[in-house]
Length: 284
Image 1 (spheres, one colour):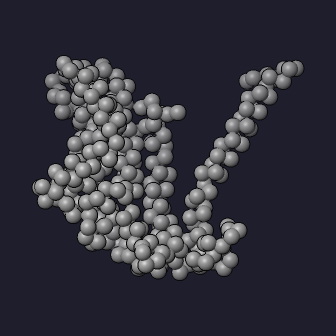
Image 2: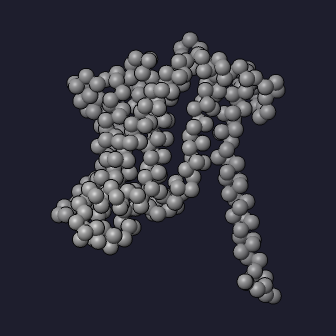
Image 3: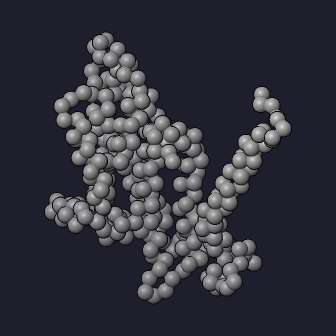
């Protein structure tokens, strides 16, 4: 147990802890402002939203934006489409990225490192560079205005997720895989029975990243989907603003509803998510 001395050295950790917590509380409050504004705006009329100076606590409270917003668009159809995309992309991302990452981390073969460098180099290419040629490719095989262009690419890996998983797989003791090979296990058995069960933190982290990216994706559905019955939630939000007018109250209400699953999922997977971030070495 640390002892206090005359120069007050024991106070230093206490003071630094208080300052750190004060800074964290202040930054948390700053980042919570947009969320609080979203929620309070969903409980206001359109006139109250644009009132200046703004009112943080609506008076009176207006709950009509929620039922009106959920019936203004085919919300449940959009939710079903978004859920299908999220489930498919999470499964495809975890399966493909973990297989490639296993080959780059646990199997010694010629050309492994050059391929890794090329893979990392593809992260420098922005989506806008490949957007047109990929669209032309899917148009030629007749997949435009379907969900396939938004699902199938996720079964071919993602450079960032592969790198994330490789870093985690490298931390698994090599003695485990070597002992399994001596016992006659194939690489598929090692991957399925040893590596994957030990990699739950990074699998949860990648799954959460992929889920959030798909749930919030607007540009992808905007490019490939034309039939309104195939719209996703993020694309359906654009229906609240058009050349004929906008409905900010209903937009805020539906956006609040859409945000809830992300917040709930993060808190449920918080411990595993932070553990995955820490062990893969991408923490700040």
